[in-house]
Image (tube, rainbow, N blue to C red; front, side):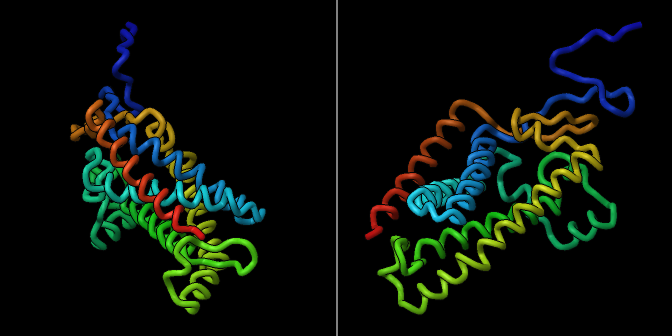
Amino acid sequence: MSVPFEPTTRRAALGNELARPTRIWDLPTRLFHWALAAAVIGLLITGMSGIMEWHFRLGYTVLALLLFRLLWGFVGGRWSRFASFVYSPRWVLGYLRGRSHPDHLVGHTPLGALSVFAVLGMLILQVCTGLVSDDEVSASGPLTRFVSNATVSLASQWHTQFGKWGVIALVSLHVLAVLYYVLVKRQRLVRPMISGDKLLAGLRVAESRDTTSTRFTALILFLLCAAFAAWIASLRA
């Protein structure tokens, strides 16, 4: 006897329980994720190619995106808030030993959370050092005149050497981890970051609020962050 197709549900991979689509990633979080990925790739390409005008423009874009994500981490959807994926060392060790919590199947896993914070932290450091860097040829950050020469020298060395390769390493590890979970553990990570929904069987979790009002709030927040980034850019001599 055939089972009638239901547009809002799908048969779970194991057992007879239906997996229902649950909104995990709100639209602002998804747009941030893909915009940041594109901007970081652009930053690496323009930085290595010496296309500095576009490197600066993309840097200001990343600044606005990071500021937005920091704010959205407190007021965004349920699973986009930092409180939902800040794990204690005990939870991380338990996850590594195979003792996972059901919530780990919903948002970020403990290892995924560490990866997210590491990438965000490295990008924040890279943007901050870029704002006070000077290549002594044709490009200098907008805030170089507000700090000492020693600070400019140290920031420039970090930004062009250690920071650049640190970003490449962390982004590469992040991509490899996603591929591992997708190809080896058979967990869908990419599709939910596009559609916003995860198929969850046997779990009843709070969905992320993703309404017109929350999206409008996110737009206002991003415009404020973009305005701040534009002001920083205007300080460039």
